[in-house]
Image 1 (cartoon, rainbow, N blue to C red):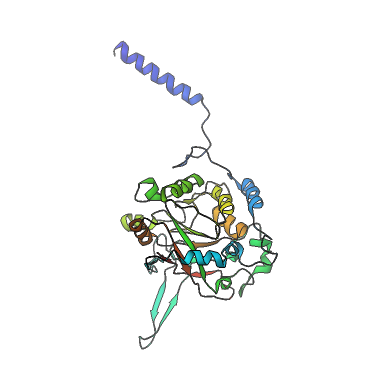
Image 2: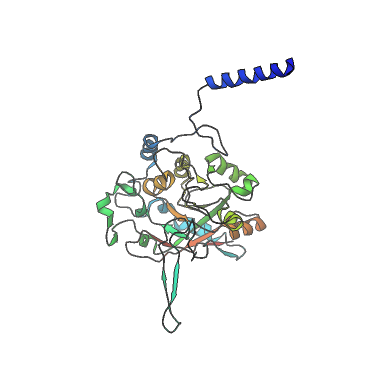
Length: 334
């Protein structure tokens, strides 16, 4: 072995020894975003954030609507003016009837005798079916939005407060699409990719839109495009979505509804001890309702063609008394 080779081997060995002496980083690597985890990083920090931003009592001690109170008559009239082209686009994904890693409880459609009537059954919460979450769906420390105790809200007959029938008159407001794959110039966000405030604000700049009070925002991660190309995966264990640090920004902007093509939270959550911190913070803390598992592929294509990322949103869930939510067909009208 030559002297040069021996010298190179010695240098490599020294480099390995020095590296071994350095303390290993205990902070997760986030992609995209900084290499250090941000607040909140654990249950204690989450609880601090939750109590700093919660909207409890903001609209009265018995309020049932939460941030939907920010949708006023004037807000609705401005939203109606966005229906300029008369183009309607459904954001509901067709019900999935086959068992899959992201669909353990398939939609069941049975034809009745005579074949002129049928029966539907579905357990819609989860990562497959397009639905709306009512405010009674999540709790933090045994309290729902507005500080109601578990026993005041949850019963075997359904939710005694904060149920989906609060939206019997429907939701009519401005919808804003946040197309992260378009911003990042990728076909979809890989599972586990967190979305931060700076990502949303970069999209606002690119799309020439500013999110404000009463808005419903829809985050496209490209989940359904990825599923079509690569097949289903266990979304409940690995999905792109919002980092919990986005929650205070939602309060600052006055967002009323949050939707996505999966279930909102980045998973793993990057908040030690809490699986769905974003869900928890906005439902139980802010009183912001959620629209999960929306199919945003068609609305993204329409928005790109029109170069317009805002639209009139309408949602009218069936007002099930005591319901924790309902399958929903949200419409974007351009």
